Length: 417
Image (cartoon, rainbow, N blue to C red; front, side):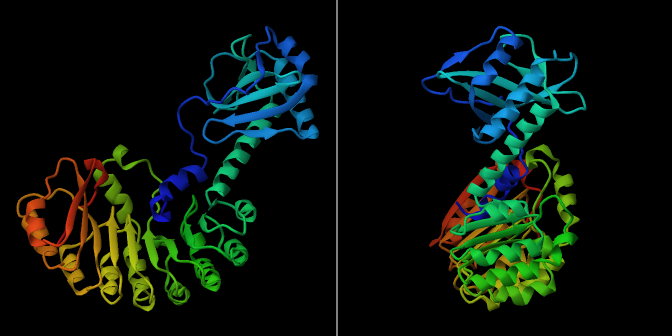
């Protein structure tokens, strides 16, 4: 899976975003499920606790079996059993907590947490009335959920804090750092001797807090001499990044993107999306970094995501030997498409299309007709817009032209002259 394709997914995992459905857990095999009729009956089982399995609603299960930890869980559950739940406040399912009891038995507790200062709710398979979640049990459940999410991130090569980075195995071949301080990343990178794919982008903090550290990160990446795919948040680019970037001589695939932290495009009006992206100064920052592209001798693939100011990059790209250009969810001008005719090595091109009406079809065909070197043209297009496929295929007989239909609300841009 390409790093550039998975930033959105990585961000959801990294921030602990949860799916809306109830948590689900496979039943422990070979064990008898118990449904204690009362809270007191549940308390009587606790001294026989052998293991706790916590299954968050958005990440894999995590097991707790260290004796000191089991004692903490027993005391926390016992404290919850001593109080009936308050009525009338909303809670959200957080996790299933399976208590594995001696003698191949188990009890499932369903934990709901509250978004207010009121306590959460503890249910036991509807065997007895809901209980208030004790502060100690809520703390243990939240800690288990966070640990599960951390393990998921590390397994997927994602780091959102220094602890994630420290836990990352030195044999990792892919690493995406989101919101980490440049010094923390630069200090850890030298131990990843097999790293081939690296990404660095914003988390939840403003861009200015990370810009000064990006040159140090790039110098550390260059010191590895193994990285072939590099993804950078365009809002972090500065002139100080040019030299460190050109020192990563082995990079073959480069992505500049603007991380979006809003809801999905389908849930926002087009103008709101465009306004949000227009407020980002990626144009000026791409202009600064564009001159580094011709100095990357092995650059073959360039990807632009959520970028508006793409012209400087396209103008610099024609002085490279790039084979693929993917301009997705980004603005591209007809003049820039024509300019790509100067890039003789270009074989694959992906662009976005939106609201092509009137003479726009003819303009599009005219802009692309000179790209005789293309062998594959992919057009991302709203479902309600017709693309002049026949005309494009006649203009580019040696090129496979394909359309990927996406919902119209995903396209805040129109091709411009």
